[in-house]
Image (cartoon, one colour):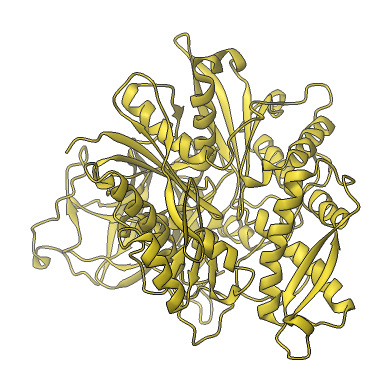
Length: 640
C-alpha cells in the first residue's frame, strides 16, 4: 500500500513525540499525534508528548489504566505504565521508575541488552534493558498511530526517527534494533537531532531562509536536552547559483543536560536535609533527584535572572521511619541557590580558550551513567569550536559562527537563552552570532523537523547535505614476534573519512591484510570527529590509538566504539562483482576454498547507504568472496 503520510519521531530522553504530514498537497502541513495516556488515577488525557518514563505499577494501577485507556494502546507488560503518570510517580517511588533509557543506549560500560533498569532498584525487582525500554516507548507510539489511523498503518508510511548526532554506530544500531522490534519498517530513516532542529526552522520560515543566511555563513546548533548535549556546525554554500546547507561537524557524545542539573541540585538539597538530622537512604536520594527536576522546571519557566526571587522552593521527602511526623520531612531550598547552581555550574561565563576538565580526581567510581566530569556546557562549546579550528574544518576567519540555533528542553528557559547570548558576546564582541529563531517550539521541534525532512525528500525541497561526521578506522594487529605477556601493537586503518557522502562507496587503498576466517574473532573500531585530513588507507600507529585513554590529553584523536565479535565462515561470505555488492550469499561449498583456519588476504571497501548505515566490506583478493562487518552490536566485557 503506498504511503499516505510522512512521519517524524523524536525518541527523547525526557519526552517522545510523533509529528506527521500528509503527502498530498503542495504545502507541508505538520500535525502532532495526540497521545492518550494516564495522568492520574482513573484519568486519561491526550497529550502531544509522551514522557519517556516507564513505571512498574501495582496490579490495581494497571487495571485502572487498562479500563480507561483500552487494550489497543496499553498492550505492554501487565504491570508497566508509560507517560505522564509514570513521570509523576518518579518522585514518590523512584525505585520502580525507568528513566533516561536513551542515555543508557550510549553507555559502553554496561551491557545494554541486559535487564539493568531501574538501575538503583533491588536485585530481586523486575528489570528491563535499555533497548527494551526504548522499544516500549516506540511501541506505544506505533500503537497510538495505528489506533488513530487504522487504514494507514505506520509500517506503510515513510518514517524518520531521530538520534543524537553524537551517537556512535553502536548506539545507532541499538536504536535501530529497538525500532524494528517495535514494528517500524526496515526502511526507517535515521536523522540527527540537530539537523531535525534546522529542518523545523526551515519549515517555519520557508523560502525566507535564503534571506536570513548568506553564502559562507556558519550556523552553530546547540541542542541541550534532558540527557545529552549535541553540537553541530552547518555552513551555507552555493552551487550553480543555488544556496544549500552542508553539515560540517558534530561534537563528541556529551552526557550532560537537564538530568545533570537535577543531580547537582539534589546533592545540594541533601545537605539541607542533613542539617535537619536526616541522612537520606538511596531510595530517598533518587526521590529527591526527581523532586529537584520539578523545582528546576518550575523556576526556570518563571525566572529571567539569578536574582529574580529570594523566596524558597519547598522540597519534601517521604520518610521511612515511624518517628517522622506525617511521614515526610521538608526543607526550604532557596531559589537563588537553585538558579545560581544552574547558571554558574552549567553555563559559566568562560574564555574561548577554556577547556573542560577531563576526569574526576577520584580513582574509583560507581558504574551507572558516565556523566561528564565537567558540567560547564559553555566550556564544551568553546572546546568544540576550537577543535574544529585546529582540525582545519573551517578557515580561521570562519571559526566564528555567524548564527546559532537553540534546541532542547533546557532552553525553554528564557534566562538560559540570554545567558548563552551573553557568552557569545563575550567571545565575539565585534560580531556576535545571531539567534536564528527565538520562538522555537522546543517540545516538538525535533519531531516536526524529522517529518519535514521526510516531506522535502518527496517534494525535492531544501536538503542539508549529509555526510559522515566522523572518520572511521579498523584496528589492525601488527605483525611480528609474539612476546609473552604482551599483546602486539595495534594500528588503525582509515576506512571512511569525515565528509563521505550518503549513498556512496569507496575502495580503501592499502596493502593486503589477513582476515581471520573460520574461528571467533574480535574486530575493533575507532572513530574521530577531528581528524579531517585522514584519507582512506591512512594507517595510524599505536600512540594515537592510546591517546583516547588519556583523559588529560586535550587533543584526543580517536575514540573506540563497540567491537564486533563474530565468526566469519565460507558460508557467511557474499559473492559479488567489484562494481556491485550483492546481498546474495555465495553458493560455493567450504571445500572449494582454502583452509579456513588461516588468514585470508583482503582489501576493504566502505559503503554508506541512503539510510545512513555504515557498511565495511572485506574483499578476498584471490576470489570474489567478501564479508560484511555490520554494527549488529554484541556487548563486550572488555570495556575501556
